[in-house]
Length: 289
Image 1 (cartoon, helix red, strand yellow):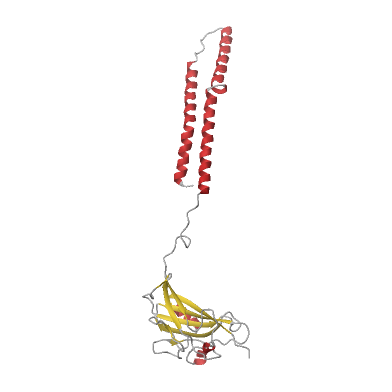
Image 2: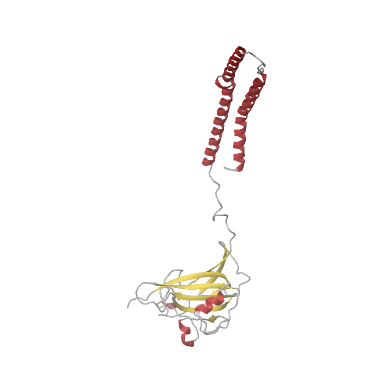
């Protein structure tokens, strides 16, 4: 119940009980007048006179009790109080029932008020749909070509433009089904960083090492042993599908990393500079021969 309704109920209660309070006040005043109107007992009265006066006082008390409490104004006052309380209770109950049946105002979509839309990075690929099966062209057991990707920025459901602070992109490609050296780390297949922020995506078949546009192949399977880094596609054998994830990062910085950088080095260098992130998933297993 709102404050205004509480105030209204209180006002109604006060109005309904005001008559009862007025009646009680009038009866109290009448009671006081009757008491002061009683004549004082005359001094030096005889014993018989005292007895007569006492009897007279008792008669007056009985008359007063009959007037104010038993048959008269006192009962009227109490009835007024009861009547006022009764109608006030009816008003309060009616208000409570009315509010219970009134539907609560609906919150805007999104909970506590819809937040303003923000720029979000997403990626698509013509090679396979997100979550689909990686073709042999892009598999390590096949053509081993890095797939093409397209970068998209959206403001809510509408197309947007890349943030002004965008400097570079980075990508990390890993097999999340594998564990390395009995640990929690999965298998890193490939990474690349310093992809220009002006790029609209990645072409198919990126070359190794550092590329003319400044893109650098980073740590991965092919970069082991001091070799130039390059793409290495899915290679899971026959059996259940493995899930391969391409993680894309939009950064407000150009990274300075040595050729011997590890995945941990890459992640640490990106920390605090990520202004967008997206993921793309592919499934792969080799066909039994």
